[in-house]
Image (cartoon, rainbow, N blue to C red; front, side, top):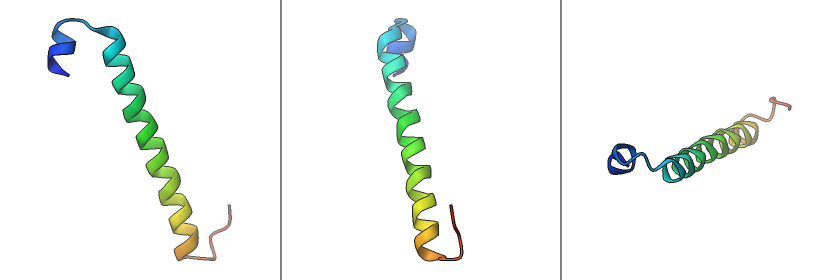
Length: 44
């Protein structure tokens, strides 16, 4: 990743950031679902 930044490889940097952001959103979604399974009082 450092080499891509130094070489200004914009498509690689953007692709990596999109994958990281998607993983972050997915992890938060899974955490929300698990919270509702663990604590049934939580309603969405």
